[in-house]
Image (cartoon, rainbow, N blue to C red; front, side, top):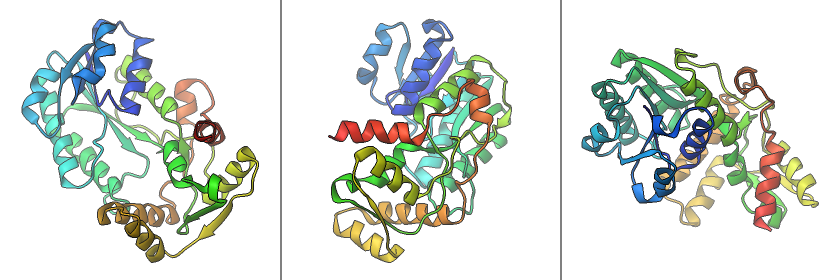
Length: 288
């Protein structure tokens, strides 16, 4: 039994869909906070059980019979996220799983100014401390975040943000495929994988240029100080913690934490990574 957590999210659902192409549905289980939202998976023969990292007691039932457990990182940051990851690792060990896999990040580091990165580093340490065979999927930066940063720039003609740096934007679909391949071939990677990244490293000026070509109108890249950007977020009702997280992202990008590109993802999937331009085209078309 292969258990995938977070299967109602974009990455988790993508992993399950890819797994279905490689292993029988009866070998797949999902651990989700809202089982009703995964009813379609149950109808396809996948075991669906409620599991919540913040309620460790639910994980024993969700992970029952697991040979491998893939932990999709929590959609939160800070000690609560790390505590949830630790609880899930402990539950996987208790359930008798042979291997735990975790969706980490290429920039995982205890010293990164981008809040999720120290959380990933702490979770990787928890896996090492657990003494169980594990695989850390060092995922590239999600390309959907580039869409988020583009925001309404196609409409306004201005992409306003602090100074950034190159980022190896990587499509969810490619990362889901890679995770499924690693699950289906247990032990292919032991410990951290190489960085699983797109083929190019692009900054926001590059994104503005790509979006300009796709949209058929010029989009200007406007650089503003961190403080001005943060104040603008707060003025639009963004919580302070979220504003600080976003500012930390730009600081980390300036330091080159997400700039590396490598061949590991393409080698694993057997095809070139999805270009960021394809992701932007789809997003811009959907917004029209």
